[in-house]
Every structure is written in structure tokens, then in C-alpha cells.
Length: 165
Image 1 (cartoon, rainbow, N blue to C red):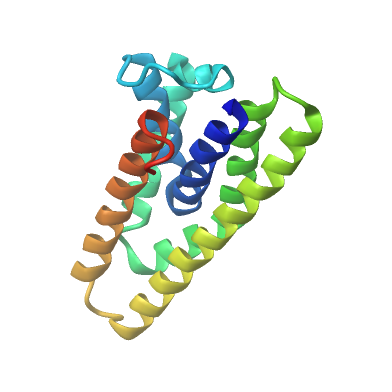
Image 2: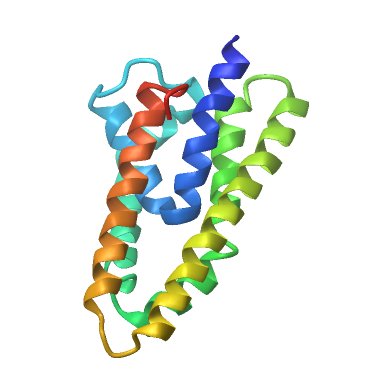
């Protein structure tokens, strides 16, 4: 039953990692550190360490601003095509690493695949949005803000109520 709960936690966290990896790590780290959630997997405790929170916060701020500028946004998404799925896979290894290594590898492949799909949807829709409205940046900023908040909220929901998320 614990493996099912961990898989239910991993799916939304992988999805949100594909949208904004740093918001996912930052919100999970803060939620664990400040006790907003009580049943986090032991492997995710590392996210609550202050250096991890600071680094995730710095990269979240970089992404926050990069995501609001149209051309920079597309370049950032291209680079993160290689980062977000790997980050999700590493989160899966952290969650399942203390269990059977076979399950950890399968979970890492699953998480990386989910993150790649959600990232592809995000990057593709943002590229289309930026192409359709090249001189208008208000929509880009609004969509980016919704993505940032959504990734953090989905992560906290997944940690607190994995089956609902």
C-alpha cells in the first residue's frame, strides 16, 4: 500500500516538475521544512535542507523572470527540455531509493517520462502563444504566473493528499 501512495505522490510531482522544476523543489522543501505536511517520504527530507531551498529559490527566481520575456522564455524551455525530466527522475529515486532498486529505476523512468510530456505541452503551448502574439507580453506573463503557482500548489497538494492530486 505504501508503494501505491508513493506512486500517487510521484505522478503529480513529476507533472509539476515538467512545468517548473524549481517551484516543485522549492515548494516541497518549504512544506517539509516548516511542517505544512506530516507524511513526506524519508527520501524527500533532503529537499528541506536550507542550501537546497536557497538554490531552488535562486533558480526559481531566475525562471520566474526568464519565463516572462518571450524569446528568453523559449530558450529557457529548450534548455530545460534536458533538465526537467532528469530532475523528476532524481525525485523519483529519492522517493523510491530506499525500496527495491528495480522499483526505483522503473519509477525514475516513469517520472522522467511524465515530466517530459508535461514539459513538452508547456514549452509547445508557450512557443505557439509567443508566435501568435509576438508583440504582446501580457498574456505570456499571465500564463507564466499561473504555471508557477500551479506547479507549487500541485506539489503541496500531492505531498498532503497524494490520491487527490
